[in-house]
Image 1 (tube, helix red, strand yellow):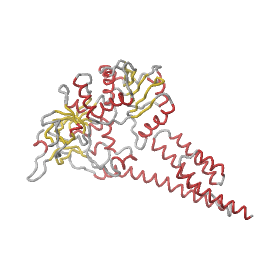
Image 2: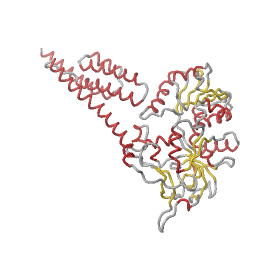
Image 3: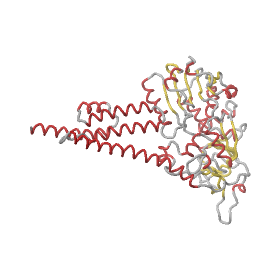
Image 4: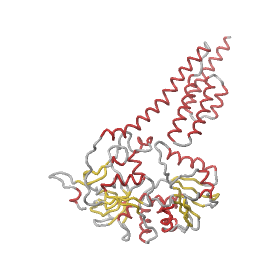
Amino acid sequence: MGAAAAGTPGPGDAPLMKAIVYRNYGPPDVLRLEDIEKPVPNENQVLVRVRAASLNPLDFHYMRGTPYLIRPFASGLLRPKVTRLGVDLAGVVEAVGSKVTQFKPGDEVFGHRWGAFAEYVCASEQALVMKPENVSFEQAASVPIAAVTALQGLRDKGKIQPGQKVLINGASGGVGTFAVQIAKTFGADVTGVCSTRNVDMVRSIGADHVIDYTKEDFTRSGQRYDLILDMVSNHSLSDVRRALTPEGTLVLVGSTDTGLWLKPLAMMLEPSLVSPFVSQKFVGILAQLNKEDLTILGDLMRSGKVTPIIDRRYRMSEAPEAMRYLEEGHARGKVVITMEQGDEPSPARANPAADSASTTGPVLIVLALSAIAVGVPIAVALALNRRFQRRHPGKRPYRWGYYFSVQSFVCGLGLGVMLESGAGAIIVCGGVYALLAWFFAQRHRWAWVTLTIFSFNPVAWIINLVYCWRRWAEDSAATATV
């Protein structure tokens, strides 16, 4: 696609290009192919004509705005602040800035830049490396996030060593197919875990052993591994520990259960809390894209030691279908978008109201939960306070104790729902907290001591300490008067 394919500007208009744009959160149908302004590189940038871009779970998280509670910090509360998707790309350099020294027009490159689902992007020269001649643009575009995650997970987090027994859970996916091959380059004995239909493929890319998870549970096989790279997180931490050597390492990359609230964060938090108390090591990973690791991966592809596996290719106009397929979680290797001529901008939305609902729904849920967590305890605390005064004229209860007893239980329920797992333990914890707070509200000093020992809300108990001091001062004054 040359400049003509990117749109025909009118006199005095900026050149246009086609790109995938989304202006509301929601399912893949919110993705639109639109004509937007073609970027112009600054003095430190490279203008790349994109030939292929690959999809990652990161893309559909941004598309849907999940987890909901991360929206205000990452992508925008009501609507996405950045309306473009895509990070991984490969293409041909069309122009370079005056201070760019590493590339020239015509160079074939691959790398990363937000907004890669487009005909052109402007990227820093530090975000790009030369594409090996023996791989296609589609294969090169598959590399950045997935392969860098696999490399850093094995090398930096897992400290992989030659001869170690390494298990890749989710070996047939985007990160998994790279992880199997990269682990072999380190001289490891590699076991891949996948479904029946992918056994032959995982074996073909170098796995020494393949476990079909529909027939065998690797956590109950009796085999122990020095390093487990887990892209699926479909076993409890206690189960996975059985499959690790006493000094083994578990590297958590992701999960097939994405969650809508905080579950992904909770799944990463549990191992970090347990790790300091056991001999085994549990770590999570968030890949850091850099030129050095992209260069290493380029060399591995050039030497034939790593070959990207592509499941399906889609045209840019088929981006919603590509995203929908990726979300199903059954892709074998990578899903790629190719930039071909003939793509036309998507028609206007037929039902804007549906898009609006997808942006406001989660916000209304957050507001409703907040109102319940704050309003219900206040109402109940006031009612209980009046009841206590009627039964004990002249004696003042600790109203804040009532408030926190109810709030802790309500918040325990809410947190259990948001984490979408472990709700029972959270509710029990909230119930114990509420019971102690109840006795505190009834002026039992032992309850205050117990709450001080088992407190998980310092702000609440600073307030309660002030209440305690005042009420005990009243009691002392009343006793002295008598």
